[in-house]
Image (tube, rainbow, N blue to C red; front, side, top):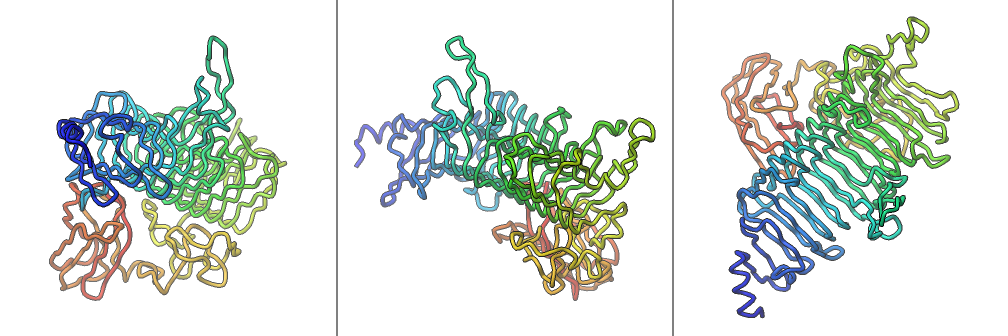
Length: 560
């Protein structure tokens, strides 16, 4: 039993405690901008307890010193609506020296993002560091920050408490977040100073080695209009995966070494797969890591195409691999990627320290360097622009790659090439059953098992005529087709034939909860705009179904 004094103190703090068995819930009032587990009443918070943050407007949130336990984290969740932060401060949310903690914006049914950092004038949207480890950040929306969207790292300092060998950042999970309009990176995870950073300690310059990350999962995030890299992961030396992210319009600030959709930085060994990267100004994927990484099932569209369009010497590639921190004799495996219209090369491979590398079963369409002349006509690149080796000593096996100037020859579902769905294969595509089976890659971009036939298919998608309603024909003549993706306020569908039946559109969250149902009278043949009232729906990834008479379709799409 808590003392009367403690209960009164809690009341004065507008913190309500509700005891449920051995776990306690705390409601954190709107006036609480700073909570510290070393202070009353928060020093009574135990592993498994939940802190509910009251919905409404806050200037910022500072959270310090909370310690959960393995398998029993302290949960921090929005309560009774959305927590909104709009600030001139140097951070929106700061989490310091916390371990086994889960920050989740799932506390408001029907809203994807229960924490909404609307604006940070002088800093990052969310920072988690100062020896924080074993944390999960999910369903947070961050917009309009002067620097990064999310920082998740602890840099070394003169206390030597966070240097390599003393501190390791374990189990970093960042997923299902929406980040837009950041001054610097969308996500910045781990220290980019893998080889050490010089720090002044007691008047002397000391080289300090930053901590490593063990266990990184970055997935299902949507990142739009980042000033620098969309996602940067560095010093993540073990158990790192970056997957299922959507990255649009990265590198808008055009800062030389900070231009990519996804950057696997020094000291990292990350698998990077099933990401959709489109219309950025930087390289699609850069890998400067330790080697041993698999880069597969990614769709990369127009990488760097809008960057310095008047100067082809300012190059940007679909995938770029270097020797920055490669471990000798490690290998890279670049497989089943769709790389469409990169400004310069499809894949530029600049590693010679790695050995027995494999570049296989990729689709590379129309690299800009194909027609690039350097110094007049002395360095016409031609087919080398698809896969460019900067050094003949690179040890790479090339296998079953599809290299073409014209995307219309590939057998894609659509020629729009704006949505990931456009790159599904139609029956009769020459890419079906043309790739060797690699048992280590057992699924495609949509999660369909590989292979569906005798062999795998080239590119990010496997053709599956038995389950994919959208691709059972060489042409879309017998389909209802969603014509734009992402969407904002309206859904535009193409109807193959006129239907007298009512049109029913259902929109679901990824958890299966229906968000919107739209019913509309019969549509005419051709393109139809359906008023969907999506402008008030939280940005995110959703599932749609549409049916009218004998015609039906379904799929995923993004709401901006």
